[in-house]
Length: 147
Image 1 (tube, rainbow, N blue to C red):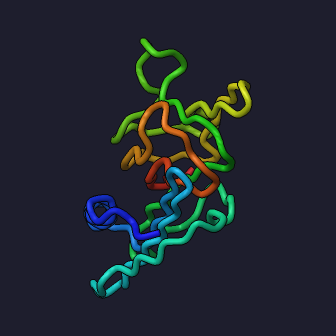
Image 2: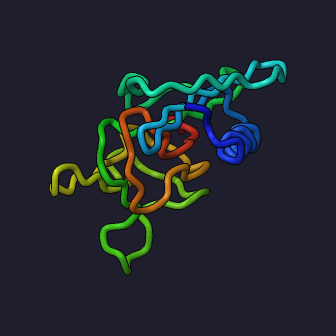
């Protein structure tokens, strides 16, 4: 399956804007993995319908920065706030303490509040509220803080 070029352009622009070198994106059975060289090489965009990346909750991004990406640990529905009319748990620029709620993941009608595993600053929220996510879907870009 050939990925939509508008989607690829949007993902590549997002990668460049955030300064990340690697991105896994899954939606509607389509999986795209983009890797950008550290010296500005063109992104590579192999698309497969296989399994998503390993379900590691946190992975390092560019080695030159301290930013990290928090990824979805499993399939589910991603929610940014505890209720539809409530403000989001976090937004870009927020300083988050270890144990502070980041998001809710609904899996098989069960809501789980996911908390920060370390103190950090939210750089970007990468997933939309109420979006279906798969293991490895990027949710947040964060900058770890010294404890």
